[in-house]
Length: 148
Image (cartoon, rainbow, N blue to C red; front, side, top):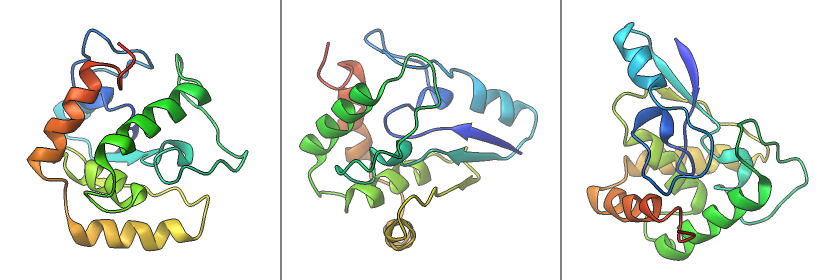
């Protein structure tokens, strides 16, 4: 198995990047894992908390190149300004996104806040995001979350 960085703000491990993309390029990692018959464990599904909550704790850490706290926050705020609570809370929506990818074997939930476990359970109960949500997200990717 492999732990692979994968979330709504940076899904590049599982997909081609749109031209407007700005951020770490993890292209091909999930396909490479699957070609080797390796399980994929999605990590950083809440993007250091930027996807889970609008509140910053000061404990957020950025692990990828071409990524910065201000861009993570901007993208998360753009995403949830569009999604509102249409698919659950922020944390539930983020988990549901990961569950939408059948190449992901499991999602590792980082718990910087104890409430995240309850959010993860509730999100899992709702199941993967519907196709309409994924289409909305695709439009955000194409514009680098409205920056392009």
